[in-house]
Each structure stands twice: as C-alpha cells, then as structure tokens.
Length: 448
Image 1: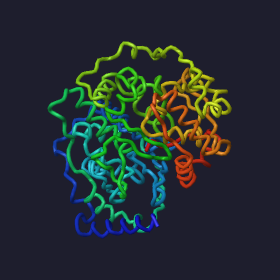
Image 2: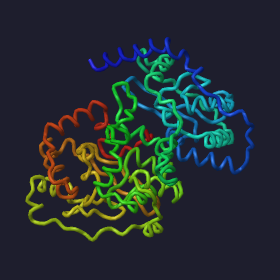
Image 3: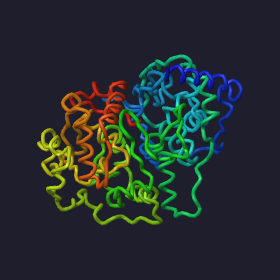
Image 4: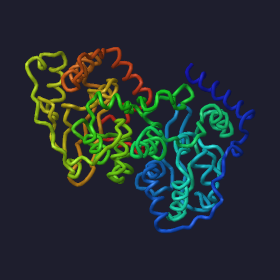
C-alpha cells in the first residue's frame, strides 16, 4: 500500500513537471561570463572543495578509479548508480563547459542525461558560492580522464522517467543562495556555509517528508538513513549530550572522542572528507553546530590523543538494574564489566553518545546489526562487533538498552520496550540490513 501511494505521488509530480518546468534546463542561471585564469592555486582550492563536498565517496567504488562512478544507492523506487565525473569525453564530463557544470552541480540538470535524482545533493550544493564553483570546475578539468561506462539505473515507473523530476524541483528545491546571519561572527557563518553547502550535512541529518525532500523546519534534527539514525546535531541536543569544542574537534578530525566513534557512513565521511580539513575549518564547524560566537583551537587538540576521563566503575545499584545480567552474558567479555572498553580495539560505552541521544534507535540497531572492523590509521581502529539479532530476544535487548542509557547515557529514565525493538528489527529485516551485516564484517561503501 505504501508503494502504491508513493507511486501515485510520483505520478502527480511527473504531471506537474509539464506545467511548471519542462525539462528543467530553463530554470538554470548561468555563471558569470568572465574568463577564468587557471592556476595551481585555483586547482588546489578546487581539490579542497571536492574534499569538503565528499565527491570521492559517492563517485568512487572500492578499488575503482577516482571519480569514475558506479557507486550504488538503494532507494524506495529502485537502484541508482553514481556517474562518471572525470573529464572523459565519452562517459564523463569531458563534453561539459563551465555553464554545463554549474547546471549539474547547483541545479541538478545534467547535459548528458537531463534532470538528476536528488541522491546527488544539488539541493545543498546550490549554496556553493561562485568562487568555489569556479575552483571546483577547474579542478575537475585537471583530474585524469577515465573511460568507465556508466551503469544504468533500475527504477520503477514513473520514477525512471527523469522528466518528472522537474515537478519535484518545483515543489521542493530551494533555489536560493547561501544566506549568512549578519548577527553572527565570521567564524560562525563560515561553519554555517560548510554545513549547508559543501558539507551537505542536512542531506543525512535532516528528516525527509513523504516525497523524500528535506524538511527545512527540522534542519539537522536527525533522520533514519541506511538502517542507522543520523543523529540530531542541533546545538541544543549536542550541548545536552555534553559535546564540547574539544570533543567535537576531536570527533571531526579523527572520527572518535570519549563521547563515541564514527561508524558506517559517517566513518567514510571522516576518512574521505573531514579528516583532510584544516583546524580553522573544525573551529568554524564547532562554532556553528554549538552556536558559539568564537572558537579557539583547544590546547588538547594539538595532540592526536585526548585524555580520557578517569575510569568510572559501576556501583551496586547499577549492577542491580534489569539488563545488567544480559550485558554480562553478551557484552562484558569485550567491553569490560564496567563498559570501559579497550583503547584502539573495543569502544568504551561509558559516556558514549549512542546512549545519551534522545533516540534509542542506534543503541538497538547496533546490537541487532553489529559493526565492521575499522582502521583509521596504523595505530587507531577497532575490532568488529558481531551482531546479536539471533541470540538475544527483543525483551532482553530492551532491558539491555535501558540499562546502558541510564548507566552510561545519564538518562534519568529510559522506556525502550520489546515492541519498539521488534519494530526496529522488522524495519532492518525489510531493508536487508540484518542479513547484510550478519557477521559484523560488512563495510559501508557510500556516505549518503
């Protein structure tokens, strides 16, 4: 029934496109006609914008040529594959001019195929300024052409007809430039620009409506994506969980802090994008996300190691809580009886933001799905966590999550029950994530 309703809605958008946009091409505003002076400095800035925009994660398959496309995206309407964006004249963007490039990146209209699906985050890239777009254009002209054919999408009707996306754009595409806040600092606005434009953070962390368009009134409030909860990263929620400039800087740079670690898609974002940015960038992002006027580089961030809090051992009252026995039976062997983990091997559960978050979704999902091993560097990483979807009942998982949220998440109360766990389990099974990660060893290949 849900698919029938969605198909009907897409059909309506398809019809609207005839009225409003036609092919979508005429809606594009051309860039300035001034000639570009190509230089090493401009190419380098473009390379940095490509890193900030995480282009490699969506346009490079594992062990594939950079930017040659072929990355798979599952959608409710079928399978979408990213395209070749190298300057190859046959399969890539070698036939593009500067205006064509603008149309594709900022307006979602490709010279090669027509309207792009919003899996390409042009809805955020629209906020990129012309200077960064010029640099990005010059950079992509400089990368190595790769003659890799594109993979055809496999979508249901009428989503497989690109023409209909014109209606979607008319209804949901915010065609406006980046708007700085004059009442905030330059640094704060720099962070806002990254989060809204190149970083396109809202594409994962903002809830979507029934047409899978972002809901701007709920910006950064969190959303379920790829079987995980992309966390609420509004300033109020981050502060409530105890995130500070030091912790946020550490997390953005290294993908870990004493409040938790990155995994799955966010791990890829850190590896491909965030970890290659500057300290000034981290300070600006922290200023914006934590809503601070000015952020200075924390002294502890000058080292790759941030001192952990002194170990906190569980007291008798905590050990008497329902769920502790399940924790001992299934979790303590790796995480330790007090949840302290093992540095560069097993994640600490004490102070972990998975448990302090408003939503218990990830706490439940990680028990059901497990996690793959990961390695951030030669000295940093963590071992795989097996899943427990077959070993532990819904009621036991509910008790275990409640125990963890109260004990390590500083929640005054937690009301996760077996019905909630069952609902999350059914959703993950339906979307194929439990079988996909059955042994906790499958690594994500995309960042969106």
